[in-house]
Amino acid sequence: MGRSPCCDENGLKKGPWTSEEDQKLTDYIEKHGHGSWRALPKLAGTQRTPPRLALVRNVAHASDSSSVRYTGLNRCGKSCRLRWTNYLRPDIKRGKFTPEEEQTILQLHSVLGNKWSAIAKHLPGRTDNEIKNFWNTHLKKKLIQMGFDPMTHRPRTDFLAALPQLIALANLRQLVEQRPWDDQSASQLQADAVQAAKLEYLQCLLQSAAAIATSPSSSSINTSPTELEQIGLLSPSQMSSLSSLSSPRILEGVNGQDLVTWQVPDIQIPSSSFFEHEQPIINGTNQNSDYSANGGEGEKLLLLSEDSLPPLADFPISNLGDACSTSSCEAVGNSTQLPIWSDSFYDEFMSEFA
DNA sequence: AAGAATCCCAACCGCAAGTTG
DNA sequence: GCAACTTGCGGTTGGGATTCT
Figure 1 (cartoon, rainbow, N blue to C red):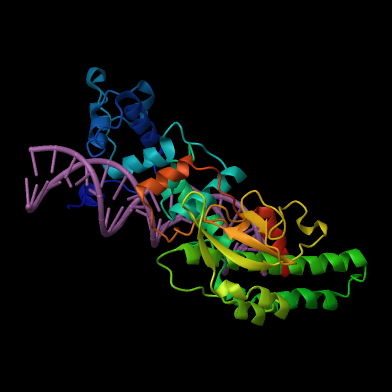
Figure 2: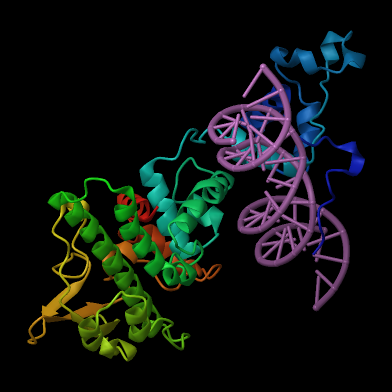
């Protein structure tokens, strides 16, 4: 496997492209296609070019109007290719990413990892470079800020470990600020927010456990119910209900797909407006998860499968960085929309602990 | 107003897979 | 089968633009 010569050789130009260079490259490719990128710079330079490029013509031939030659693109083919594919291509969509595009990137990244070119195929008009930049400058930071590992899209355990302190801070702030929180609705909102945050993280852990349990390569669940109790996510009574989490039952689903089941406590969702625009998380029905009464009072049987998880952390477990088979990539394109964490939830959740 | 810090993105680098003779 | 060459990809960086102090 040889490597193409570096642009430094032959004194080829590097750095930002001028408008003249852009024009040359565009004109050539529009007329002839790019063909061999390696040969393109030289060919583009020997073409008869439109009069508008007269500014860059070779002065040595300027006196002979019948054989005017123009200076070639003093760039390597690689540089030309990048300039064309990332900037000059006519079908490139410019401007800010829309929320829909942002969601799509998050979803695809959760499945494909840093396969920017594969992700770009699902975003017409966007280049892999653009998506990569957007990820590195916006989305990655956003996930990290919210306490999620940007590679696995799962809650970071270090963030989880700090949750009790964050919750305590949220409560402490109320006392310190001495704002008129004695207003009943305000304090109810505060309590609901904290409870909702707890539930949210509990759900994340359940899903992580589901993912791990259905993954043949995984060996253990990192966060046990005991740990949940220790960090204050569960009360002792909830602990007892959740004890079966340590050994989730794996059932065969209707389509041969494994389902993981636990006995989960009947945790009430806050009634305030805090999440009124969100779907119920654990208690109640959800279009992406299956619930069935389990006889026991206050308990329901929660059935989870990889594609029937509740919405907030519903990322396939196969996302481990670079793992991407052709079939899985294709499946993404044909799949129904994957539910993801909503921005509104992130914002409200994080602002609550800020 | 000015310097520092941070953000942003076009472009480069180097590796690996694919192609060709 | 092998080596040279080409292309595509992902990671990284340089420097201009913007925001902060």
